[in-house]
Length: 84
Image (tube, rainbow, N blue to C red; front, side):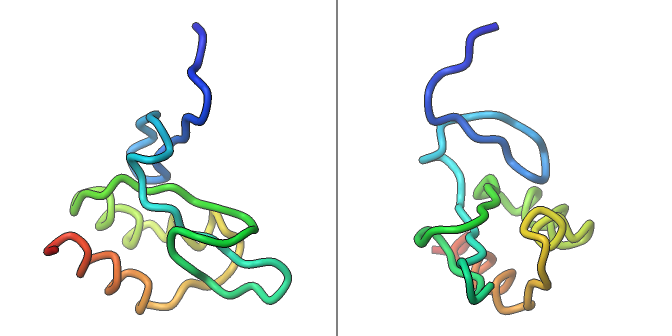
């Protein structure tokens, strides 16, 4: 099976898709701060849905993927984006 360029996989539901359809969470290099949508470093991709956000928070998927602690502020910011 051939994959298209620039596809990513959601860390919660494992659905593949174009990277523009996901939220990008980045662990900045070298200071290990967490940012959304921009920056260089290790990245995690998440579907912009309430279900995937809930699974990612419950199972600590962002922390595992980025290999660092993630504050609740990140989850609150992502939850606020759902209501926009």
